[in-house]
Length: 273
Ligand SMILES: Nc1ncnc2c1ncn2[C@@H]1O[C@H](COP(=O)(O)OP(=O)(O)OP(=O)(O)O)[C@@H](O)[C@H]1O
Ligand SMILES: [Mg+2]
Image (cartoon, rainbow, N blue to C red):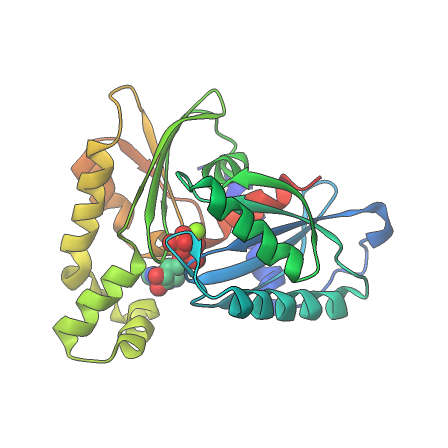
């Protein structure tokens, strides 16, 4: 992975964690805002006009399931809260935003996603496809982008910057947590916590490995022959060692960027007009 790609993602991560705004930004020159409504996380990213991260905020939320908004009011509330936080931090109003849709979404559901973003007070300037947003950050135009989120795994094959085809499979991080919860005999939320702790990795990985292998197997089945690279994005791709599982099972060179959870949200903001 290009060094500068990882540096950019890290920069965004730092800005989100520290909640600090670099005073050298002249916000009047224009900002770019991206909104990602996911199954597990709602993320807002704010960039300057040269795509440099200014700030961002995220909250875990269970308002979307498999790309479908199941709790409209809840989604609007979370997004509104994040928007207000960022506006206070920046001292300006966030007016326009780009948002995104997962691969294979039904046309009716696209409208629901933009409705949520607009109900939270944004003017939606454009809607991009999530894998296209990820590809922009990764600076790639060919290969397979595999987005392993909370609810689903989106497999998209890109050629010349466009999506050749996409498949959205209903397996994601939630399934890892369920398997962990059953195996360790702990509640879902506890299992989710354990899954996120780096120090639990030696315990967690062997338990979830079969699920990761299944994801890799599904990916392999859905990828045409001439794909030379797989790029892993989405929160579940944060899991240490997942890239080795994918590479082994697919026999395709697998690349994982720094903090894959932030790739798609960052790319959505890059596409903001
Ligand atoms: N460090 C980590 N280790 C393992 N899993 C993680 C880590 N960080 C996040 N996750 C998992 O990533 C998932 C959320 O990822 P992401 O934010 O990409 O999903 P989403 O976009 O909200 O969901 P979807 O794409 O399915 O709609 C959750 O299942 C979460 O448990
Ligand atoms: Mg997602």
